[in-house]
Amino acid sequence: MTRLPGPRTLRGRLALLALVTSALWIAVLTTAFNLALDKRLHEQADDVLRTRAEAVAATVAARPDGRLVVHEPAQDQALDAGVWIFQGHRAVDMPPGAPARLRRQADRLAGHGEGFAETAGPPGPTRLYAFPVGSVTGRRQVGTVVTSVSLDPYRSTADAALAGSLALAVLLLATVYLLTRLVVRRALRPVAAMSAQATRWAATGAPERFGPADRPAELSSLAAGLDALLDRLAAVLRHEQQQAAELSHELRTPLARITAETEWLSGRPRDACAQENSHRAIAGAAATMQQICDSLLSEARTRGAQTPGRCRFPDLAHQLSRRVAAEHPAAPPVRVEGDAVDAGVSAAVAERILMPLLDNARRYAVHAISLSCLAEAGAVTVYVGDDGPGVPEPFVPSLFEPGRRAHPEDGHDGAGLGLALARRLARAAGGDLTWAGTGQGARFAVTLPAG
Image (cartoon, rainbow, N blue to C red; front, side, top):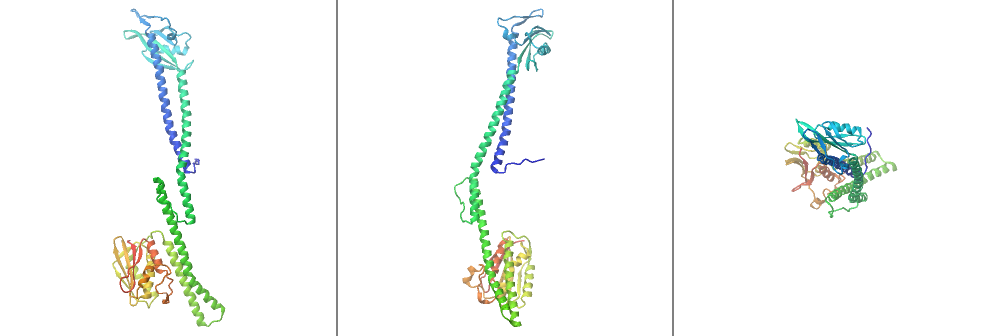
């Protein structure tokens, strides 16, 4: 079955809905009106027939011998039109020139008590009424007066009323459709203006917002939703710009080192030891670039959504401890403490959050690194600490800013992104990363949702 295309605009759809609803109501009202009018016209025709029959019956008298006597009034032309008087089943008086169809129908009504009948004509639709007259002897009716009236005037009135009601219905539907389109257009005009304004603000990154202005309730809700959407778009744009700036800034140093080492290798001859050192420097710089890219891309993949999965502590802690020991044999051991609890993040995400903290602790720890877990209501807190020199007090406010290092001259190959990216990953997973140092050494708290 082919489906007809509907209106493409909200204004057209609302106008069509109003048109269909109005058409149903108008159809019901028009039908009810015409049915009521037709019933009323039939009642009027019956009243006319009864009145004429009663008037004629007043001129008829029954003799003691059972015969009917008709007393002719002075002006009987109106009474004689379409009137039959029967004694039994024999017509003693009938209208002159009555059609045969009407005579036969009047004969059928005679002697059968009061009743109505209709005939289609010719000369047209006619309604007849039988009225018993005279005395009743032996349960037999003495006479009957039959009157008739043409239904053409009543049918003409009903047809004219039907045509007028249909014309009025069409006019009402057209008026409803036009008024609905006009009202909907005026109602949606502020919505279209707000949508266009929000589009312009989003395209240019403008800081303007609709704010809590005096608007109807629906438009206030729309304004609040658009403001929230614009704020989120602005936050995403700022994050993308910040991420691009961080990536560009952090890749500049290792890329410059690779370029310099490559120029030195190709620009002048070097001995085997110098070449090996250059190769090692290039490999280290490439590894640093890969670490930066992996960290930033990992954060971008997990940003903005709750990360599904589950991992168990202390199984994950022992796994990370073995990894640190395998990759850095000279590093202090990782001491694992805490009860067995489940965190509501995957092991891969938890590892990407905790490894920058363990790397940071490994660089500055003197004798040991601690990794402990504490279960709380609806959350799991993992503490990573070391017994190193700690974080200088003036540097604590900027501890999680990307590209910032407390000791830039310590010579390690970190890019200053570890703590910032670990916090972003923790927040993307529904948790957080905070500074929890209260004594000697550094101590960080990673809050994750409970599994």
